[in-house]
Each structure stands twice: as structure tokens, then as C-alpha cells.
Length: 154
Image (cartoon, rainbow, N blue to C red; front, side, top):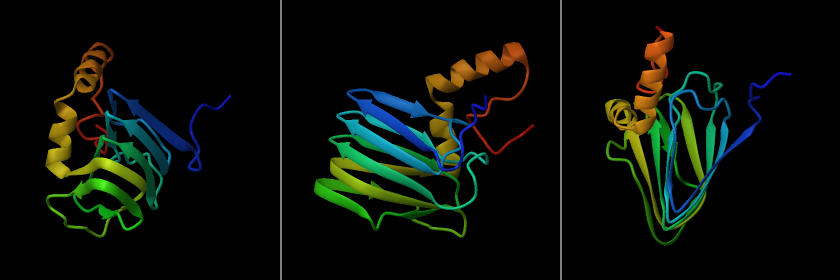
């Protein structure tokens, strides 16, 4: 029985009244659905295990937030994102590069999407309980944590 996910898999993240974090090598899917109501989610899209091509993130947010961790050269496309009441996509650098393309689609109601790129994405991943848990586990077993930089295979 093969437990690896195929590229056509849809990964679902559900965060109602809580914060959910998916960091490091958490998926191989290029289609991700995030549903949050009065909560938040952190999704890491920096992993080289995600197959080449566009990544589609389908959002259904109500009074919630989503933090997307991406590489510096990632293009963020929010054209198909529908805003009801207040809402916005915060991408401070706003520099879309020639790298992978992440399409944000769906609807956000009084919510926001925060895009963290490069070094800020690394810091966001480092200062998390998930990183500490993985670092402790890796220290016992030997190896390198994947959360700070999923692209590093050392």
C-alpha cells in the first residue's frame, strides 16, 4: 500500500476557532483548500517535494487569517479571490518573480492573507512549537530539521 500523495490530491486545512500550522514537508499536493472561521492557518509552500507547476490555494475564510510561506521569487496571483466586507492580501514586498505561481481563489469575509517570503518565511517557521518538536525528534534520530528551510537536503 503506497501512502504517498499523488499530485492530483487535494490537501485540506480546517481551522475553526484555533490556529493550524502546516510546516516543512507536509504535503505533495498542488491543490490546497483552507477553511477557517475565527481562526488562522499557516501553510508552508516552500517544499521542493511539491511537484512543478502552479499551486492553487482555495480559501473560505470568515473573520480569519492565513499566512502563506513562500520563496522570494514566487508569484502570488489573487485575481480570482473574492472579498466580502473587509479583507486584503498583505504582501509587503509585492515582488512577483519568475518562480512558482501560487493562485489564491475563493472567498474571504472580513479576513486577510499574509504572504511571508524568503527570510521572513524562515523566521515565521523557526519561531513555532512545530519547529521545536521537530528539532527535538531530529536530535534523537540524527539529521536536519526540514521546517526552517524545506529545500535544504543536508
